[in-house]
Structure formats: C-alpha cells, structure tokens
Image (cartoon, rainbow over all chains, first blue to last red):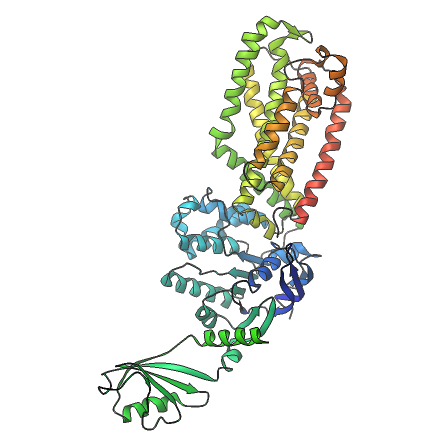
Length: 315
Length: 265
C-alpha cells in the first residue's frame, strides 16, 4: 500500500545557516495516527512546514499518497489538510465564510461546501457561531475552526501542529474524541504535541526528532516496552507509624522493590520490568498498610522521551 | 472523512478557486466601503468643484474642449488605477500579515490562479470606483463618448497593470508603511504629471519629451481619447505598451509566488 507520507533525505538550512533538518527519512502508513515529538527547536514544525508547502526544503523528497510534492503538487496538496500551530485565518471574516472560502480553494461548489461546512461546524460545536467574526471566538473555538477549515475538502491526511496547545482539559478531551473518530473513519492523522499523554492516548506510531535528526521511529507499544522501570504512587488509608522519616523504607516482602515514603500517607514504589504490581499491593496489605488509591508517577512516554533525548544529546 | 466524490478536472477546481478569490476580494472591499468606495467619491467631487468649476471656469478651453470636460477622463482614470493598486496591495499584504495567505499556499490553487484572483479583485474595485466617479462627473459636465471599446479596453488594461503593481508591492512589503511608500512617492506624482490636469502640448519641448517617459500619460490620454476623441499620444502604441507591461509583470508575479518570496521561509 502506498504510504500516506514518505520523506526521504529531507534537509533544511535556513538563510542564517542554521541546519534545522539533517536529512531525515520518515514514512507514515495510511490510516495511521502518528505523532512527531521533540523538544522545542528540534525540527518538528519545519518538517510539517515543508510537507504543508509553507517552508522551502533545501534537499530531499516528500511524497503525499504517492504524489511528489514538487512534480505532482496539485494531486499531493489535494490529499492534505493542515491545522497550523498559530491562528492563520482572517480575523474580520465570519466563521462560515472562512470555511466556505477554504472549500472553494479545493474546488468544492457552493452547494457541496454548504453541506460539508454545516456538518463540520455542527460536529465541532461551532454552528451557533457561524455568523460571528472569527476574532470574537474564544481560543478553543478558534482552534476548532481551524480543524473544520482543514477538513472541509475531506482530506486523506490531516496534519495537526500542536492542536490542543492552550486548550482546557475538557475541550482537549472532546477534541481527542473527534480526532479518534476521524482516524477510525480512515483519515491518516499526523500530529505534533508537547502533551505526551496526548500522543500516548491517541497515536499508534511515534517518531522522536531532536536537533534535526530522527532519534526513534516506532510504534507506541514498542516504545513503551523499552521502559525498564516504572514508578507508582500509593496513597494510603492511614498514616504510617510515627517517627518514620521520608526516604527509602523497607517493607516486609518487598525486598526486591525500591520503596520510599514521600509523605505520612504516601509511598512510591519503583517496579522493574517483569516484577508484578499485584504482588506489591498484596505485600503492602500483609504489612498492614492499606492502599486507598494508586497512580503512575509520571507519564510513561514522558520518561522514555526524556531518556531518549538525553541519550541523543550524549551521543 | 475521505469518501471521495466523482473526481473533478484540474480546470474545474482552478476555476472554482479563482471565483472564490474574486468573491472574497469583492466581499472585502464592499464590507469596508467607507474606506474603499466613499473616499474616492468625495475626493473626486472636490476636484470637480475646485479644479473644474471654480478654477476651470477661468482657464477656458484645453485641447479644444472646456476645462471640466478635459480633466474628467483623467480623474476617472486616476481613480481606477489608484484603487486597483491599493486594493491588491492592502488585501494581499493584510493576508500575509494575518498569515491567512498560508491557506492558499497549502491548497492546490495554481500560483497563476492566485494572482489572477487578486488582480481581478483589484480590477473590480478600480472599475467600480471608476463608475462611481463617472456618475458623479455627469452632475458637472455632459460627458461625451467617442469610443466605448477604447474606454473599456484602456480601463481594464490599466486596472490590471496597476493591480499587478500593487501585488508586487505587497509581496515585498514587510510592514504596512511599505504599501504606502510607492503610491505616495511614485504613483501620485506620476499621475499629476501624467496629463490629468493639462495637455503636455503646453509644456516646453524638453519637458514634453520627459513626459513621454511617464506610463500614466499613455493611460490618461488613451482614456481621454475614448471619451473625447483627443489625445497627446498614439493610442495603438499606448495599448500595446500596456499589454507588454502586463505580460512582464504577470510573469514576474507568478515567479515570485512560485518561489514563495515574502511568504515561505
């Protein structure tokens, strides 16, 4: 099957001599939910900028659904919908007009555009705001407007550059649901995000980029399997014995685990790959320590991300 | 979301895109008519009153016609070219400034279609202002019509040429000041020296020759020929010159769009 996105030897050198991309290769399969992650200035937005025709590449090739972005730009661009990081619509135009104008750029007739615009504006809770100038919308609404605009021509690939930046948690989760449904219907989604929880929740495959180089490109499951340890926080029903200071403690039966007390009623237990978490709860119970609730200390992907970036810096 | 309907031809898509840009541009200048259509109407009415009526009545004839009739074609043409230029310069730069030009850069719209859409928007405003000024002039003078064909050809070609100029200005502009420099320091002086208010036959021979280097002189005189049947220049040469400049500026503008000058990093 033709790749949704294929990037070969992509290089970008800016006018000031800064080499933002150092010959990256990247393939995204059709139907994938793909995350491109990396610290600020790593090259994520430059990569997506080149794919979106907003940044001029220095070297390399980009093909979208098998269409070369240079030699077959018309076909390639028709397959793509782009939601940029910053708002880039006319602040004085009405919501409805912005979406309808975008439809015209892709050749949709007025009738086709009207049907699709209503469908999307309703799905994204913007239908009631259709006659308002876009500058009157809240930040979250503006972001949803950009999603509606990008989807107006039913693209096969949707690129989202930091889609939920500055969006409150409730709205972020509703946008996740929208994107998941979109992906289930067959749209390939490529996103960049700083919320690694977002990538872990949504994406099937991930590439991590740093200093213009791909550090890793694999499935989320494969990446998470590389975690050697994971730390869990246990909130306890009652305080531990008086006089116990914060720091490493010994719990009978949990000798192979790293256990530390972080508060009177809170423990942290580091579990290595292959060690059972069930055993920890049983042993704590046997030791008379009742667990009220439990959670992972940090986002798993976040731990891996930091590790990989640090490894790349050292190398 | 990717259930595709019957594929459309590239031409059909580009035509819809062109219409979309033109409609968007017309909607823009109609929405802000107080800034786009009203000012030239007021300014030109003042020109008719002050130069045509008050001063013109003391001047008498110019080029064989009364002074008011002489200046009306030049003032109409002046309105057409400044508005065609201003519309594209401000709209395209505004889109660059707000980054909404990115919508077009991402889309499959061909650079020539983007250019044609913006230029047609400029022509639409230039022609609309030209019609408004013409209607106002009828209050002050009985306008003749020597050749409607010449009037239409010269109006459209001049509007296209200046819309292209406005487009190139907007491409290179990096701040709003940059789109006022050329109209203020180049277009306005050339217009005033382009035979709007006088026949160049009144000038000494040296300045007549210098005036022949002013492209606006050819547009004003060609338009005046269409209205009054009098001109200081050869009409065929003037129209040919307009066509050549339009071809050159169009090619340069498309090249700029393809390169993404001022738009792509």
